[in-house]
Amino acid sequence: MFKRIIASALLILFASRTLGQNFPPPPAEFDKSKAIAYALLGNAELRAAKLAIEIAEARLKRTGLRSNPEIVVDYASDFAFNDEGEYSLGVGLEQSFPLANRLKKAKAVSRVDIAKAKMEVRQQEREIANAISEIALEIQIMDTRVGFLERLRDKAREISSFVNSRVERGELSILEANQATLELRGLELEIHQLSDQRKRLARSLAPHFGLAPNFEIRFALTEAIDAKSALGGFDNSVFERHPEFQLAVLEAHSAEAEIALAESENWESITARVFWENERSVDEPVGLGTDRFIGLVVSIPIPLRKKGDLLAKEHRIALDQSRLEAAAIKLRIQHEIENARAEATNLQQRLEQYQENVVQLANDQLEETQRAYQNGQLSLVSLLRAQDLLLRLEKSYLDTLENYGRARLKLDLARIDIPELKSAN
Image (tube, rainbow, N blue to C red; front, side, top):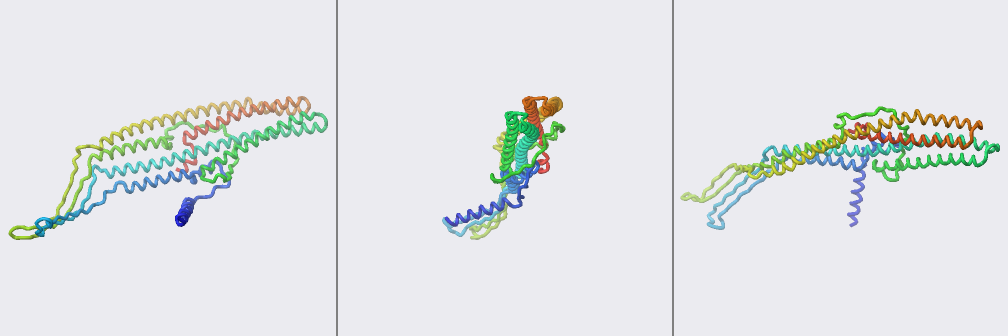
């Protein structure tokens, strides 16, 4: 029992070292590009999926090999009957030869299996890149909101400092100072909440990297979402890099290869045997004598029952199914791209109009109101109303900007427009 425990421990230690060979340490700080690149190296499920390619390649090496030849020994004697010393001894070498290029067609099936395994890995890489891109976008949204709130916090801090200075001179009441301080504290609290959400988002990247749950992931500060960049659209090249569509196409190729292999099953293998035979028998009036023979035996199957046709029928149905699925995926991809582009274009136009006609005007209004308040022309209530109006307008603008960011990401993911995936493949 103790020996088994020691052996298991050594096996686990060896396996952990083997899996960790040539695996780089994580960077001190991640961004979207580094995160995707590192996940494509460290994701445990992806590494396991890549082993399926090696399995398919190993299967190809053994597929298409002829069966081993057989040595046939044939011996007969009359010792239990006349016992005259008669006997026969034959030694032969027998080999079967598949017909209809069956072995070549079996290799064709295995080659398609390798291509499918590679495409499944690409599909899993795409899913990982998509998941990380979505988390990176949410972090970018957090950073955009925090940047906006920090600008408002600085203005609120300036107002609060001004009000408190007036309170010290007895020009304003403590109630007005408290009101300004509460506005400032509310903004600071919202910033802290967004910062906590950002940390949780960064920690959610750990499973994609294959890192321990307690590993602290630092994600670089991101720039605000760019709402003015050009939007890509649909083009046929997307099908060439779309693993889901390519998998459906490969399924059709696999069905075609299986049909050819199944039809070859109608002809079973020819069996050929080369033999040498030594026969000792009684031949009157000479007596006991020996005869020797060298011969060839060929067994040719007759295809009366075409079992392969029944299997081929099943694969023809699978072929039709794969072609229909490929056509459906092709149409869905086109719709996804066009719908995402239309949504992003609409939001892009709304953001431009909103920024020019509403948000900028609200900012100017707050600046003017703040100057009027400092000059004693307006009350603190009017200033706080202007500040609250800007806060609501900016939040509405940010909500639209976030929707645009998600629509833009949806468009990029539908187009497989992820540079890190292109470099990985």
